[in-house]
Image (tube, rainbow, N blue to C red; front, top):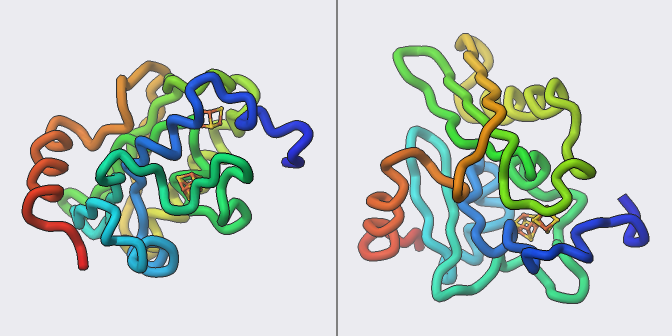
Length: 169
Ligand code: SF4
Ligand code: SF4
């Protein structure tokens, strides 16, 4: 996507997605991009995934008001998926369960959506990296809305615990 046609530059939410974060990352993605910034992030390790949130109302460490994402070409899969909302990616009883939504607050989602099958492919790639090649994957696409990029009902509790006690160092 070129700068000329990048709709994120005229985002009515003021690039909310890069400020709310809640990114679900593989260990490799976390260590490559976010570990060195963990002092300004809340990091939750949950079910082999690393989930990162901003602290002190700061945006993603790679966000630049003028230039946008500083690692755009190598941004994590969860960033590539947006405005699809990767709500759940866990291993449960030997099965990888993935759930994602298509209704976020992104004002340009109709332009930015990739085909659903392409999004599923990226999620499966992330799942294989985190959980290995051999486990079955159950993937569910829900055409609906989540109010925030959440990690289920546990999110508020886990985020609070993480901000309070478990910030990754
Ligand atoms: S993906 Fe959507 S919400 Fe995020 S900066 Fe672009 S237009 Fe805004
Ligand atoms: S890595 Fe880039 S796209 Fe992802 S949240 Fe940070 S600034 Fe936004």
